[in-house]
Image (tube, rainbow, N blue to C red; front, side, top):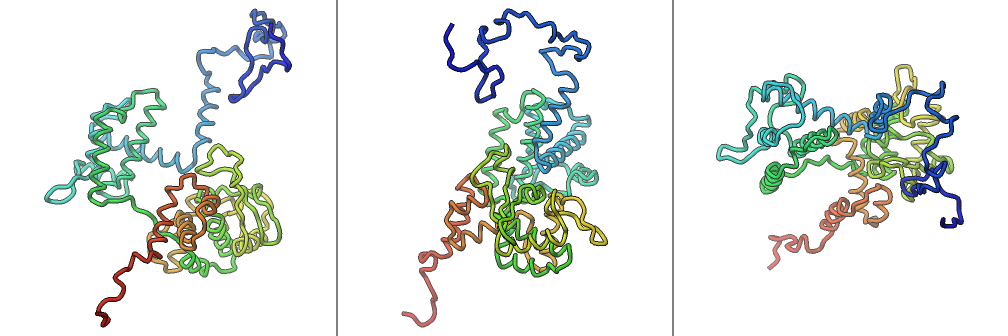
Length: 396
């Protein structure tokens, strides 16, 4: 037997697995069990089958799976699957059942993607079925969806097959090739994904001007500045912000520890998790926390009638606050909660903040995502962008 300097590890972790050589197992691996640990003991539950999960174990695994998904992701999956079920029932006259055939996915694609014709763009979804989908609340309006919506619904049905252990029809070569050609067709037409307008410093100031010193006004001012100044936080991150992760350095100066985000879903302890909340943002946050008398739990909360501070805001409520403040400020454009994030990046690019500093604040892991903002800002400053100058002013 090999001499060991350290005792064998029988627990271990996924990164540091246990020693499972026979000599390291109880009783030398010969299979004899101490009677005191027998499953037949009266206080022990019935033995489990190693080949399958029992119902409580399955329910616990499903609960962990659901908890690991963001609320917005789960909602988008449910919406997409409801749409698939409604479309399938109307198109094929029977309830949907997995696995789907590749032909069904191709039909879904041609029903919802547009193609160019001399009469204009058309798709194959019958008008009566389109109207029925609207009537059933499965879509907001008649007409083809955006390409991003179509590809998301295809991704969701692909994942549904994966979770069921069924063959994925979206991986069929004919489906993949058609989707690839569809993307190219949209690109050749110049159709690009719609992007929300950016709330840069100037329009953001107009939103802040609508916030009075009431509890709701103090909350909304603190929320807008917290989300924008700490790097353009997503609405789910704002809704999930808690006092447990907030450290006061001095009056009106805080550091917020972003323990979870879209780009750090495992909650890894990263150097860039600490986000400063200082200046106007820190002062606004201090005022809100004092007025609301908060000491634990969610930072941003509902304010009920009579000035009662209630439960934490949802991600949908954060979006609603941004849109309402835009309307009150008379800011024109298609804005949403994400406009705070894009506005922060756009402002950083315009001020020539180093790319690494911007990424440390936003949490972006891809340089390519941010580069377009910086290149757009550089293009506006480029001497080559306006070589023609002013013409027709008497110059020879």
